[in-house]
Image (cartoon, rainbow, N blue to C red):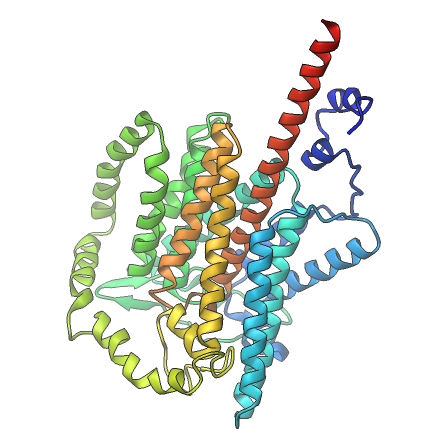
Amino acid sequence: MSETTWPSIRREPALRTWELAWGVAFPTARFDIVTLITAYLVVLLFIPSSLIFSPLGGIGTPAMILSLLILIWYAGSWLTGKVVPSGAGRPVRLAILAFALAVLASFVAAMTRAIPLVEQLSAERGLITVLSWSGLIVVLSQGVTRYEQIDMIMRRAVIFGSVVAAIGIFEFYSGINVTDYVRIPGLSPNIDFSTLLTRGSFYRPSSTAVDPIEFSVSMAILLPFALHQALNSLRSGRIRKWLPVALIGFAIPITVSRSGIIGAAVALLILVPTWTPRQRRGFLVALLPALVVLKVSASGLLGTLGAYFTGLFSTTGDGSVYSTRISAFSLDWPYISARPLFGRGWATFLPATYSWTDDMYYHMLIETGAAGLICLILLYLAGIHCAAAGRRKTHDPCRRHFGQALVAAIAAAVVTSATFDSLSFPMLSGLIFLVLGIAGAYDGIMNAEEYASALLADNGNLAMSSQE
């Protein structure tokens, strides 16, 4: 960058990070990326996941369709020069490429066997789903070039998530499935959830998700970002900051779901140790009253959850690992041993025909073989790497804490994927890939800010040397 460029940068502090770092004037597209992703969050979180565009089958949710349109918009804007890819998030972009290739290989493998028509159609629709996930990562990591954009996207995600949590809380107390009354022209229900599921004496709310488990884990992924925003000293208003935390946090246990509680626990174990001593003390002090409120407002819930976790490793009972996971392994092992490398085909192990796996990694091993399982794990690790690497590149406390929130959210997704087939659920999978794309953008932005700071420091040293 020439010395004559720097005065204009100093006069224009609102320039984007990438322009500051590389001295390039980035073209602007007609539609702002934050607006498009906000629209995606609206349809992902507010339109019930059970409502689909029926010609596309189970994958035809409005969120999936919109993510594909966003990808088409981005590709068109890139080809016409209206946007310039930032080059950020290389680890997650390479990981999603490897994941997509593994899925494609499993599709080819599926077509080499005598495959029923229903499985073939499901496999073809599954390729569209992977394309939409890939588009989310590419568009977010390449199109988001300022930390302020990341902050705005995740702030809106938390606000929308708190509304979804409030719907779930209403369902828990009323026993009314709110989404059963939602009718949208052009969309039809894919699953009949006219009545809420129950466990013990409690209703299990699903809010706008397909299932209570999906609802609870989605809230667990949003919880670290809600806490991050609440602890931001630059934001004002205690109710404004802490109400989303209270709603999202309360929504997790009332689903009576182990997966959501485990996911929230993992996120907190990663996030809380990085807080200041004062913040940790405040968390511990607030934890006991929160449990008291939960006990009073939902009498018997803590006991039900305790019994549910106690029976986790029993050899009998509906909630045991043995009866729902380990015993299923012997039944499904022939599918794995028959095609260990590329599996029997992505999206072909249909629950209606075969069984529920209740384990995303096991599910991947059946459908995409060892290649797909390894690529999924690498994808998760790439997201954690980008979040952790970006955190190390900044000294700003708020930005560092956001990086840790990203690590916590992805770690929650990693652990809960072993407790149920997470990527089979539209709301949760949409959130997971959105967070992975944000992690890629965050790493690139922190890298650009670090580089820009170094250039400014070098320029300042040169100016001082010339004056001397």
